[in-house]
Structures are given as structure tokens and as C-alpha cells.
Image (cartoon, rainbow, N blue to C red; front, side, top):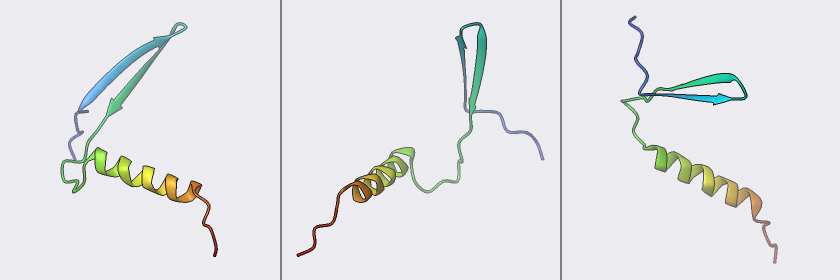
Length: 54
């Protein structure tokens, strides 16, 4: 299998050490990153809000 080329590559130097971060995206994905982050936020809110029993 041929190696995929990263969609983005970011280089950041911190105190003499260079960090290289490569990002890959699934082109067959059915939901966007916004959709995924929204689901995560909704789960976090649901978990953080105490359920009031009547």
C-alpha cells in the first residue's frame, strides 16, 4: 500500500526541540470535525449536569 501524504504538517520549536505534527483526514468520513466536536461537547455537558430527582 502506498503511503498517504499528510493533509497538513506543522513544525513548532520549543526550547531547542522541534516538534513536527502531521495531520491526516479520512476522505470517506460521513461527519465533519464540527459534528464530532459537537457530539463530544454534548456528552461533556450531559455528564457534568447533575440529574435532579423529583
